[in-house]
Length: 579
Ligand code: GLC
Image (cartoon, rainbow, N blue to C red; front, side):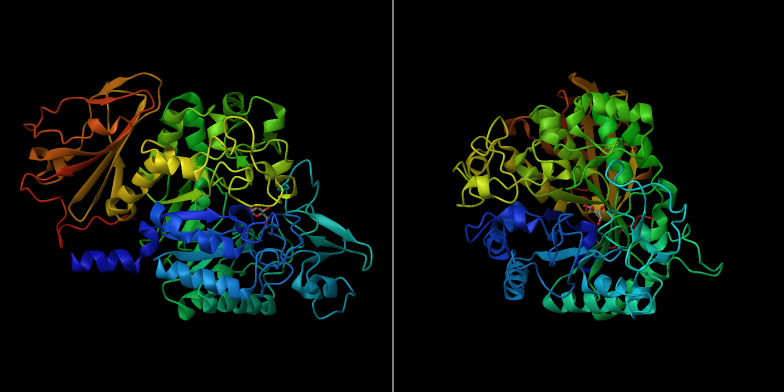
């Protein structure tokens, strides 16, 4: 066991449960209507008891907040509305005491146009900061495609003062940094060093593709090594702090996913899995696990230290851009029937619970998948209580609502006048703070909060999921997805019914190649049904298993026990590591 547990904590991110927090939306401590670091620090006990192990803080640095903080004006400070650097350190120190790691967004593809570097750069063509950004005499055709169709129509913006165009992959007020410039690269390392020294355990690398996919931008020599920026960042990070991680945001096609880990596992540790997320929504819309199964099957193998990160919802639009147009239409019809619920032609600006009309069965199905599928799960704040959205807030702001702690008028988020809150508060309707809040759900053993907490704790106790080899299992029910994960003699199995019909599933557990399991017993760890139902299925003779019963949109988590009476774990047993 010694070896096993040492290994698990060495590669902690493979068994982590990540929780995304937008500090300004989470807990206000000084009644100015904006969440802040002292507020977050007060809520760390809650997060620790929920069971999450790593917090990801959305951008915390000074910013005009024209893009939710993804437009930075100072990389060495915290936004004054969120607190002081002292408050940040207090928070990190308390988190560490509670066993929580904290990472934060590092947004280095671009700065705000208000950043002093850009102000310098645009002051004259021969300013020393000119080459920190990307300038052209005329807008190039490349790169094609804009990130925010309807809001931006080009990736180039004309600068009147100096008569040249600058590159911006996102909004025009976010000029791209010139990642090829060694001074920019050195500065990025310095920033990482600064935040690591304060106690962060790593970074979410925003817009990772644009740090390496410079192919379309003219002026690149043929021997240009596009991977160098990520490799350099990783090298620096690991030298400064060996257990720190880089989590990349890269919404790219499956065949490009491996580009980010590095052939020798010397680039990013984790990569958000947008492709799987889109497959999940198509499957939920169709009530058919087929698309999700296909996406799982096409996932490439990654170096052993690397892993994908699964999520149900992030703080942006739910992008469907990797689905075909007819597939997008299917998801839109089911989950975003009105134009006001859509964004950029390929996204949905709702959270999951309103998309499924608050149907607990479908909500639990999605989170059961999140916590039982291979790879690392990421929960966005509020998902554990079924937080809704506010479609009256424009654009992506609709999902960045205030956290709901109690049924008080400000939802326990703040005692300021809710009309003055920076993030919108969902106060009315079925997802309003009187109906949906932490305090009420804590008291109710059957609440979503308590179900999700159970899932998280069980997920952490099943390292087979993060570390093991996984495969899909054959069943006689096309509406059911079944998979198993094996590691160090332990075996975890999960079944998910995507349909609205109760089914009896015959399952090929695929025991043949797992010594002893055929004659073992199946223990039900967790299921959608009432607690009373949770009982150990008695041992069965091999080959004579009864079918598994699944409720509409139901799920079951199982552990296979060997016939030798062990709990399935064996130190030093046959290793089945992923990829
Ligand atoms: C990422 C963020 C998004 C932001 C963009 C530009 O995609 O998630 O919110 O607008 O980067 O920084």
